[in-house]
Amino acid sequence: MVKFSAYSLIISSFTPFYSIILKNPRRFSINIPYNYSTKSRTTSSYIQNAKIHTEDVMVARRYLPPLFSVAPMMDWTDNHYRTLARLISKHAWLYTEMLAAETIVYQKGNLDRFLAYSPEQHPIVLQIGGCNLENLAKATELANAYHYDEINFNCGCPSPRVAGHGCFGVRLMLDPKFVGEAMSVIAANTNVPVSVKCRIGVDDHDSYNELCDFIYKVSSLSPTKHFIIHSRKALLNGISPADNRRIPPLKYEYYYALLRDFPDLKFTINGGINSVIEVNAALKEGAYGVMVGRAAYNNPWQTLGHVDTTIYGASSSGLTRRKILEQYQGYGDSVLGRDGNNRPNVRDVAKPLLNLFYSEPGNALWKRKADSAFQHCMTMKSFFEETLVAIPDSVLDSPIAGVSSGREDLFADVHDLLPPPYDAREQEALYA
Image (cartoon, rainbow, N blue to C red):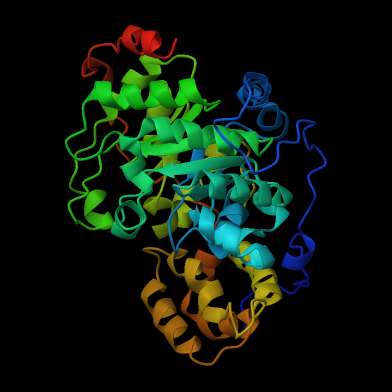
């Protein structure tokens, strides 16, 4: 017996995927084609686009600032997860998985599969990666019809298939001139803000001055004014992405030094922050924004459930997990099989739900029932009927409880550890 309340499950807030491809009503007047050449690009077009991207008018007009954002995570922050995340938090900024520019360009006839999303997911940022300027320009131009709120360029992924064979991701930190050119190309082909996500260094190129050189050159060569800083360096000697999130030490002092040395830029901090208490601790010390990754996926209820009230100061909505699942069922059943070959299937759509009852009574039984249901359930309705009997009503119907524990003093001494100030005079002379 399904454990939802008796009202209708026709969820009007979720528009079918193939009807949400909206044309941007605010297309800017400078229509720069994507056969862009950095050599032929004029100074006047650079200045015009710089004005568009530094003002961030669109963001200021429509959404609250990105005090909290969910990190782009390959195979995790897909449409299904982002739908769940938005049901829990109305204000968190959401990022797509990284999409290679080549994927967008070569799948031009099948873009809905990669770029479509429900309008409820705003504010949402598209993250792209690549090392070919022409493809970056084409991919950005093709993404315009999908009306993302920001375009982010990946300079932080340490995966061997990205930073190794792909020659992009975090490896691009070793070539800030190219990144500056790439950001100019991206900015020239969109009317929304652009940003870069990077680490604090790569291998032995891990001094604070080298990080500042990267920031200075990219921001000088392009309209980029926002950087998301993962506060660890990356090691490209063959260790796994998981080890790259664990072995290199966190150096939050580098992030806070960037705030001091580049007051005209915006920096979001990322890495090792696992609760809203720690998010608020970072904001208290002056962070522009905080990006959280695994914690938002592995424990979405306790992490995202406090974002709107504890970080953005909104009133409690009284949201419960039963209400979330009622809405998610309507979404899930509307997208099953839309890509053909029975994909996405129930397992695909239910994947982000498996952590919704983290550490709650019935969680282990719920997951076992889910594994069994994946073998034969063809709808989300039947999946929930079979599995939710494992979860007590008291869990399903309880609003979000008190804020989970965290390190309130995580950044308490960070200002005592700051490296010496960066001297940009030499760089100013070089780029004068």
